[in-house]
Each structure stands twice: as structure tokens, then as C-alpha cells.
Image (cartoon, rainbow, N blue to C red; front, side, top):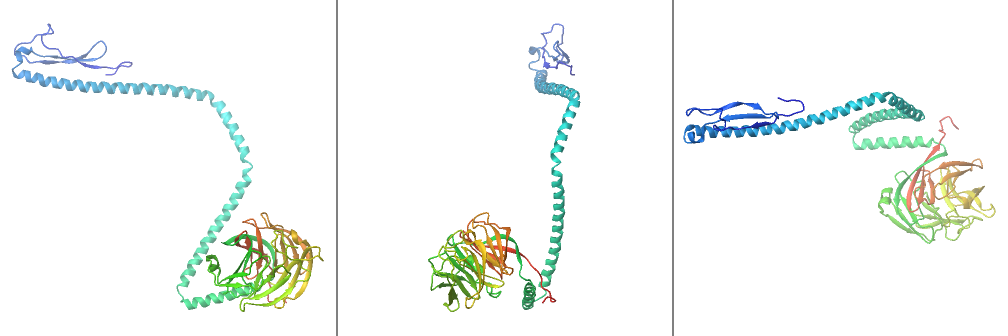
Amino acid sequence: MRVPGSVLYPVLSLAVFGLYPSMTIGPKEGWQVYSSAQDADGRCICTVVAPEQSLCSRDAKSRQLRQLLEKVQNMSQSIEVLNLRTQRDFQYVMKMENQMKGLRTKFRQIEDDRKSIMAKNFQELKDKMDELKPLIPVLEQYKMDAALISQFKEEIRNLSVVLMGIQEELGAYDYDELYQRVLRLDNRLRSCMGKLTCGKLMKITGPVTIKTSGTRFGAWMTDPLASSRNNRVWYMDSYTNSKIVREYKTMDDFVAGVVSRTYSLPFKWEGTNHIVYNGSLYYNKYQSNIIVKYSFETGTVLAQRALEFAGFHNMYPYTWGGYSDIDVMADELGMWVVYATNQNAGNVVISQIDPDTMQVLKTWNTEYSKRNAGESFMICGTLYITNSHLSGAKVYYAYSTKTSTYEYIDIPFHNQYFHISMLDYNARERALYAWNNGHQVIFNVTLFHVIKTDDDS
């Protein structure tokens, strides 16, 4: 029984015959257990009346008394455990009652402040919406981008199906037949590329770092007139005081550092603006304005010719110096030399030369200062000049030998290692080879082309 505000504490009281005069028991009577009652404090009292000890110490009732005493002790322990649980439960109830009172107080406070809170929250939401309004166009763009990405995913799935079909188809042919198919495809591709007329430079991407080697300055190149199976690489470290050229059979050998041949030139070179063209090396002879043609096949000098009035040995170099006065280059239309003269006030001069005799075929005088040029290269008869050799460089100036006119352009490119000392165009690869602060890198170029048709003259 539980009374609000109080707890019943059970107490066991054992009364032995003789202590309560009002209760009598005969010699043959056994002991008795009276029902429990409550005292004034609400505790449970259990009364046990037993015969006198002297009357039953040796008979069977004494044994019964001991058993009863053990049972009473067990009852006492059980009641004590119950008492402890009752106290714990009461404390838990009191704690919960306090928490409920606190919650009722909070509910009343929330109810009282509901209107003011709603007004405050409404204003906060309005302010947040005002902040988010400028993001709506961005979200619209994201929606467009998401649609584009979805389209890309669909195209990739379609491409995967095509590739799987190709893979299955490849399994149906032997190696020789597959090889012939590859050759036919290569010929068709080259025929298609042959219909591409010279284009105008539109974009430069990259670079792709091929290797990190050598000093801060140098040159590396492949032959634009070599066959597709000939991928030899030539490597010339430093810009002066050297005659050693290293040859690598393939680009993979170049990356791995596997040298196939080493050539010792008859003359030292000057600058870094050399080229390999149709199996021969063309370079500027040390401390002169002479161009040397050296054959890798015979190991001899086939021809050499001086450029009339051309400055040399840091008279009119590019902005980085390094005896870069004379720049030999090639493109789709042939071989060129870029330099400067006193007669043209130190401005850039372009000459097209015969690769066999190195005789100057035609010359164009520009109005761009050679010393202000970072580097330059030819594509389809147009000279492109960069404004710097350092970071932030871009193609800034273009001179067309076809129209003898120039224009200022803005084509940025990533000067990843912050110092370019060689930049040459390879027409076969349609790429720019560069020596960028001890790194050999390649830039890809995007050209605007006009496709020739069979009806064109």
C-alpha cells in the first residue's frame, strides 16, 4: 500500500511468550504468527508468539522455532530489499515530477512568446530569402550544367557500347588482318589530315611534362618531316659552350634516359633555337651569324651560310638572353629564320630559306622589337611572338607573311615552370615543344582550319 507523501517501511517484530502478559499459551500449544500491522510511522510489524524456551528446548517444537526464525530472517531481508527499491522508485518519481513541472513552465512560456517568435522567425526567413535571391541565376546555371553532365553520361554509355562492340569484333580477326585494317585506317586519317589547309592559331593548351632533366636552358626536338614510324628525339643541353647532341630512338627511350647515339658537332652552338629537319640539324654557329646544316646520317656538315646583317652573340636576343639572337624554325610551308638587324632598328626580321642550300628566298621586316619578344614560332607562314618568357606569358603579336600584315592578339598559355628558353612548333605533331626551366614539355595547339574539297582549285 502506498500513501502519497509517505513510504511504508516494513519492520519485523518478534515477541517471545512471557513478554506479553495478555497472551497465554498452554504447555502443549505451539507458537503462533499473528498477522502484520502498522505502527504510527506507517511501518509494517509482524508479531510472532512462541512458547517459553525452557519448556520446549529439547522437543520437536524447538526445531520448528529455529526453522521459523530462518524464515523470518529471510522475510526480513526480502522486506529490506523491497524497502530500498521503494525508496529508489520514489526518488525517480519525484525527479520526473520536477521535470514535468519544468516542461509545463516552458510550454507556458512558449505559448506566451509564440507570436513574438513567429514574427522574429518570419523576418529571419525573409532576410535569408533576400540573401538567396542572387543565387537563383547560379542555380539555373547548375541546372544547365546538370543537363550537360547527363548528356555526357549518355554519350559515355553509348561510347562504352561501341567500344564493347569493337572489342568483340577484334576477337573475330587474326593479328595480320587487324594490322592491315589499322594501316588502312591510318592512311585514311592521313588523307583526311592532308585536306586541312593551314590554319590560324586559336588556342594553346597544356603543357604536358615529358621529362625533367638538364640545366635551366636547352633544346629538344623531333623531325617534322620524318615518317610516322620514326619518332627519334634529339637533346641539346645548355645554350652555349657545347657540341654534344644526344639521340633517343623513341619518346619512351627519351623519358627513360636510354641514349641510342651521341654526336659531337664540329662547331659549338649558340642559343637554344635549333631544329632537326629532314634528317639534318640546323643551328647557329658559336659567336657568328652563320647557320650550320649537319647531317646525322653522315656525321658531316652539308652546308653553312651567314645571315647578312643579322645580329649575334646577345646583340638582339630574346628577353631572356642566352645568345638567342638567331632562331631557326619550320612549319607547314618550309624553313624559316627569325633574327634582327641594325638596318631594321633591332626589330624582328623573318626570312624563308631553302633547306638544302640555306639561301634566303624572301625576307619580311616587322616593327616588333626582337629584345621585347619572349619567344616566337611559325605556324602556316605566320610568326607568333610571346610577350614574355616568364609567368603570365601569352601570344601577343602575329605577323602574316602571306599578307605582310600584323595584328595584336591575346592567346594565354600556362608557363608552368616560369622560364621558357625554347619554344618551337612541330607541324607533324601539331604541337609546341618547349624547354621550361629544366623541364621538357609539350603544348597542344588549336588551329582554325579551312577544309579543301575536290572542287577547290
